[in-house]
Length: 307
Ligand code: NAD
Image (cartoon, rainbow, N blue to C red; front, top):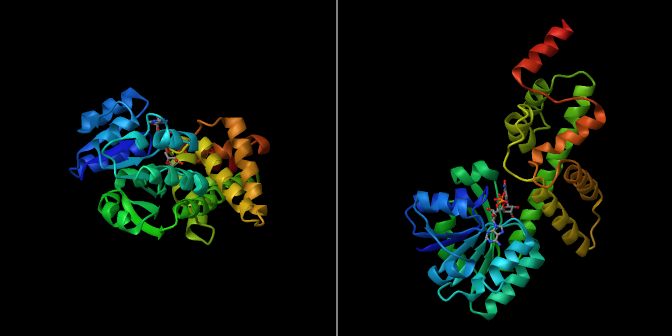
């Protein structure tokens, strides 16, 4: 099946590369020409706009960083909506159910089907093709694109109702945001009390406190102090804000989510929206006057001080 792919960032580039590797003809567009050139090196074909992608492909996928970018790409004047060949549009971005429903309705007026399919599993999941994809929209369209999505990970059909996949994704990400924020807070507390952060993470991972934050984000990006997990703080804040909006619309209590939201707003104001979201530990370290350093030399130095 010929495929268009718009948005070649941390996630999109890797997903598009997998589709090229699987042998699909893939037409790509991104506002950054250098990343389009890198995709062309892998075998993709360049396009000049989202509309150009949609003129040349029946199935168009997109992975974009903001609600506004998703609206512009789908329904802007040079958007997918103006394409001649496109039949279906799959938005892999996290944009919340309201925006997904509005985009779906606008595309439907032009006879273009929309599936919202936000993903979870990070850059490593995008690279390895092990993402969880939360798809909602017409079931027959899902059945058509399921083999394409299967190159990217495990697709889950959430519901025919547009936006249901987005709600599922916001639920998942609020949990991920909470786990990372809480794990940062407790590890900083332990270090302040004199514990070794690497030992703490080993114990947490062997015990009942383990989450993806302790299993993956701490060992790979926080303890080595590389802060390079591949998900921007601004994107985490976007997702938490979208969750808070949707929960508030449903009239639900949001006490824990609101506290988590305040924490992430602090991370964004202190570390910047472009910082990696594993930087969430830094404002907590500053407040506590400690550094959570799990590099071998730091552990050795700690042991020498203790002896
Ligand atoms: P990113 O910022 O790395 O990539 C976004 C890409 O879109 C960039 O290459 C940018 O140049 C391009 N872009 C922006 N506006 C555009 C436009 N109008 N037209 C064409 N291209 C445009 O973001 P990412 O980390 O790849 O995330 C993409 C989406 O996936 C977001 O919705 C995010 O919340 C979600 N997501 C990310 C991760 C992750 O770990 N990074 C995990 C799950 C879900």
